[in-house]
Length: 550
Image (cartoon, rainbow, N blue to C red; front, side):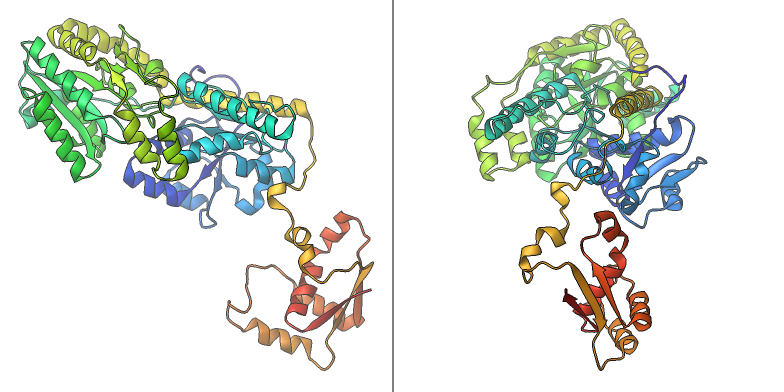
C-alpha cells in the first residue's frame, strides 16, 4: 500500500455520488454504508491538492449541496450525467461498488480511453455483486480500469468467478476470452483511528458496573446471525474461556439487533452456553457510545462465519484502540490481524466443495434469496471454539500480553489510516492513467447496450428508402398559433424532456416555404442538424407540418 502523503500525483478521479442512497445507507449503518461514507469524507480531507470532482446520480446535486454534507474549502467540480465527457478532465471515475459495466458502456460512446473506471468490492456473496463481476467480461472494460479488492481472499474469489465465466463465454463463442479484463489490485478499507481519553475507560466501566478485575470482551458490529456472525460460536468460546480463568468475564455486545427474534436468540444462546458470563448490550451506533465501548474493554472478539463478510473494519478499529483481537481466520481478517502479534486467529473451515450445490440451486431457482443463503451457510462453518476459548482465557490471565499485543495493534492499525489508503487509491489512478495514455486515443463507438432507438426500431415504421425529406407546413393552419395551443397542453400531451426547437424551424419554413434535408450527408452533418430534424418530426407528430420522403 502507498506511503503517507508526499510526491506528485498525476491523476485524480471523479467520485460517483448518490446523495439519496448515501442518506438512506447512513441510517442503516451497514458495513458498506460506513465504508462508503468514510471513504468520501476521507477523500475530501486527504486527497491530493486540487479540485474535488463529483459525478452525482441526481440532477439536484450541485457544489453547494455537496458541501452541505461534506464541508470543504476545496473547489468542487460537479460533472452532471449528461456531461459525462468531462470525466476526461480528472481522468477517472470512482464507483463505490463493483458495478462498472454500465459506466463502461456509457464511456464507449465517448471513447474507451477517455477515462479510467475504478470500482471496489464490498459484500461479494450476493447475486448482484457476482453478476457485476461477470459483466466485466462482456462490457467494454479496459486494462486501464480496475476493480479494487479489499482483501486477498476477495481477489481470489473475483479471479475464480472471472475464470469460470470466461470459460463459459469461450465455449459459447468458440473464441478465447481474456479472464481478467481489468486490474485487480488489493487495497484495504480505511479508518479514522479513535482518540480515546484515559478517563473514558473508568467512566464506561463505572457506568456499566464492570469491576476492575473483570475482563471485558468486546464484540462490535451488527448483532445478526444471518448477516454478520452467529452467536453460537461466540458464546461457546466465552463460556469455555470463563471456565478456564479465575477472572470474571464480561461480554460487551456493542451493536444493534437485526430484529426482536435475533435479540431473543442471542440472549438464549448466552444463557445456555455462557451462563457465568455477564452480558452487557449497548447501542454503538452513536460515535460516542462506540468509542466508549472501545475504551472500556480489554480485548476484542469477532468469530466471523458469514459469506457476506468481505473485509471487516471492526478488528482494525479495535487494534487502533489498543485492544488485542481474537478473530476467526476468515477472509479479510486474515490480512488485518497478525496472528501471535496483534491477537490470535482461530481456524475456520467450510465443508468440502461440492457439498453446497443444493444451496446454490435453491438460490438460482429463486426459492432462497441471498440472506437465506448467508443464514444457511454460516451455520455449517466449523470454528475452532476451543482455540478461541484458549486465546480468550490466555489474554484474560495475562495483562502484560494484552498490553504488548495492544501496543502492536496500535502500530499496525496506522497502516489502515485514511491518508495512506487515499494515497494508495491515487497511486492506482496514476498507474491507470499511464496505461490509458500508452493506448493512445480510441474513437467513440455506438455501444450495443445503447443503440439509437431510431436505428434499432426502424423496421417498426412504414418501410421505404428516400434520398431526402421534404418538410412543409400543413395547408390551412397558422403554424405559430397551433404551436402555442399545443404548448399549453399538459405534460401527458407534450413531454418537456424532449429537446426540440420548434419555433426556430417554423420561422425557417415561414421564410423559405419548404425545406429539403438530404439523407445522404455524412453522419456528422446529420447529427449537426439533429435538433431541427427532430423538431420537424415532433411538429409532424402534432399535425402542424408534413414530412414527405423524396
